[in-house]
Image 1: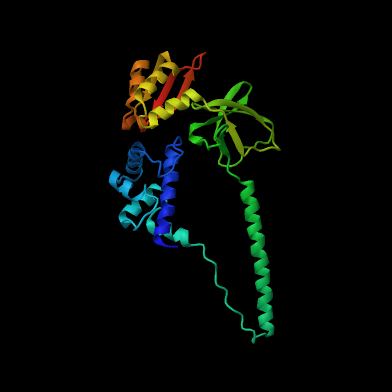
Image 2: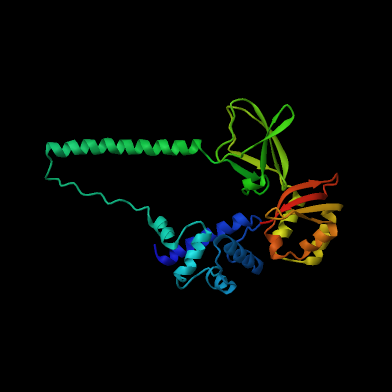
Length: 304
């Protein structure tokens, strides 16, 4: 595998990392917009404390074909952003799986000792195959719990969902495990998210859940997209916000470092969404309430 081929794989890994931070983005490098580039630059600076220029992204990441490998210091920044450590570590891991070269057995030396070693080697091979089978079955048992959008089947970030066990009408928070959700007795569980409808279910002890589908909250996802995406048509956006935001909307933005909170009404918050700033794109909705008409009447937001 050439270094350019490895760079293509790094580009895909960077794109996957970007989609984790911006789940509404469903495209590729070719469909990357100028706003996506600005978002990526912010992400890289936030996570790596280093910068990549807009021109560099246009030159090296957006093209489908690269004619030469970028500088190693820039590759190191991308690797750090993509959780790969360094370019050397990335290439080592990609090139690591190699087929071992077996030493040829000299057909002349068929001594009793040779047969002894052949028997031992056969036993080790059987043990190795058994170990692989055991690891595969263990991997299936430890299958990661997946949350999915019931319409698009896209993965839902666990950070956006909270789980509660219901006991005598009391909701007790539990951690969304990395493995299958299972209990020793029938248990009523509810999942809540500002972007998805509440999901109530009874989990049987002999039916551990590995995949849970959540029905999206359309208005909430629109607001999230407005906060994170670039401007397409500000006039259309203004009309849509007038429809989905309640007239008595209250927005609380929790300030970092225990500095308190900011308050916005409908007009003030809508103005921020019509022309989103870089700081708005970094904010996260953690709580959201709606009225009888499904219009959003309360939002709580945190910011880094």
